[in-house]
Amino acid sequence: MSNEAILETIKAELDAADIATLKSIWQDLQEAKQKVRIAPEVAQKRTLQFMGENHPFDPNRQLSIKERAANKLRLKNQNRAWLLQKFKTLRAAWFMVIDGKITASGKTLSDYPTPEQLLEVCLRTGKFPLLFINEKVTAIEESASAWHTTIEPEDFYPTVPVKFRSNEVETTVIGDLDTGAISTFVDYDLLAQQNVIELSVQEDAESSLHLNQSYAYLPRRVEIEITLASGEIRSQTATIACVVDWQDSPFVKINPHRTALIGREVFFKFKPCLLLDFEKRQTEIWTSAMISRARTKTVKKKGTQRRRG
Image (cartoon, rainbow, N blue to C red; front, side):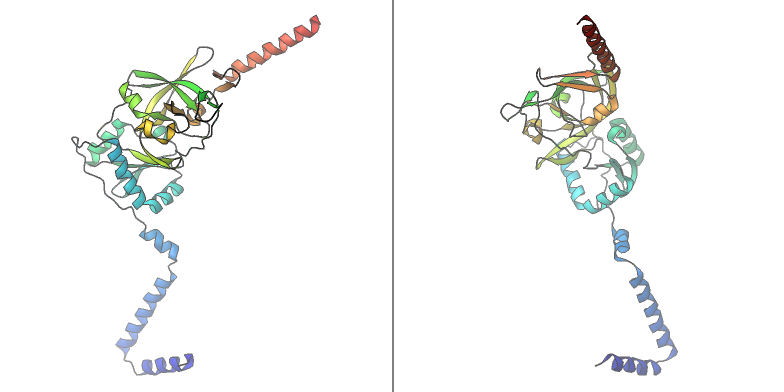
């Protein structure tokens, strides 16, 4: 049947229809037009919702970091499209989810909630908050370099001594310096054995991927301290990734003796000048003022030598 014939048939049927039938057909046509006007991407945004629930807060509920990270990974996989959309919209490094809604967020990990802050949320809401970290923050562009020996022949990794402190307890670590990493990654067991950190019942855990290997970690805000070549001590608070089962993690593939990987975020806070001496395989931490004074002395010394000559 041609289109013309179909239209004639419809017209004949409508001519024979009563008022109630015509009104019903008109209403159906209007509803159909409204549905057609909704763009597919708009409809998708309306239906995109967080899937999963917050567990009720139970102070006696004991879960290991691995169990917490496994739960988080399951939720991340279920809500990957929703998470990507929210991280892009908020431009956030992390955010907190309660009852499917984002209740708090931060542009960097420097204001990631402390265990005390999380406990306050638990007591106020009666639920465990879900915290998600933008995977771009923990991305690592790692490459072999210098100082600590690596698995590669005649290769070393640059190192820097840092001190981690929490609740008046501290420990010093010789960490590998990696400007290809934003965050700092540390052996969880090392810090736990030194009582710098301990697992709290209200804390959330995360999982991520590095060198095609997954790992679990606990985000924790600690005080980081460095010592300048002049002896001056500087300290800042930062959120680090405390990695579980460090010796089986991807962080020791290149350097089996590594206990920490120090990222560039720490030094953006301190704003030092790092002098890497490849001959002596040493790292010195200076300030711009110290370098200016050293340059001035060098210029004066060269001027004196020219006059003597």
